[in-house]
Length: 373
Figure (cartoon, one colour):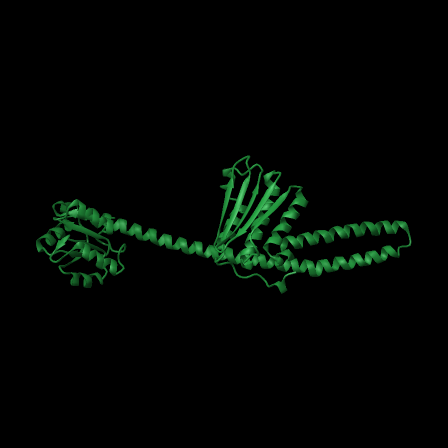
């Protein structure tokens, strides 16, 4: 870090009881063409006052009358300036053990007085390290803030998705379902009063298609927000397992190791959505012949495991940037204060384990039962 003459002068605080050593330090800095202002103090009281003026760097003798540089360092720490103002020991009476101890406590560097020619380099290096540390800390703070904002956005989006699911399910139930049912009654009336066989055949075909549309709307509504979820997590998981088995022909067994769940509505929803997404992935990719689901709960956490005996997941698949399914499950678990573990070996199946603390903080509440179909 070069300090050019047209830059503001470097403000140095020198804790030194020897005027001669202070002048030697100044001479060494001038020989290096360093543009600086320096203030010398001898006591801790004067050091505190000068520290309040926020120098750019501190040079400190190790052994001073009645105290050491480590006492001065504690004043820097107490003032909240550790890491902001580098402190360099400049001493002729410090052993290696004491220097190492000082470095461990946070002192930036040390230099023996008989190596005064290296002072400008040591000062520049300490300033560079201090600046890099501050920039790294600032970057870490900005990254943490960005991650926090991203998590809040993901939480808001997830909550919005659930609310939209409930709204769409309600629309399907109230409007589309109601309209299709009314048409079914009309078709039945026309079929009963049809004068010829050709018209009756067309009406029966239309009724069959209408029945298919009603079934499809019911399936869509149940996938969006099944009413059985209001009866509790276990019935909802059993419904998922049964639906999966009917749809795929693959046996899915649910093992329950808990009494009535004490988990909050939001935690139960996280578990339900995890099972739903896991079973969807199994349908698409697992090529398995058996699925085991296990749900347990104690006073500290709810645990859900979904395991299959399929082809497993290659580690490279998990690392793909666009593998959003499992990433979404992990993010959903994280938002609920829990975590998701994926254990898989190619050819030996996959197990997805969700663990959510019972005291976790969860996303905003979903629409009330009165608002859901």
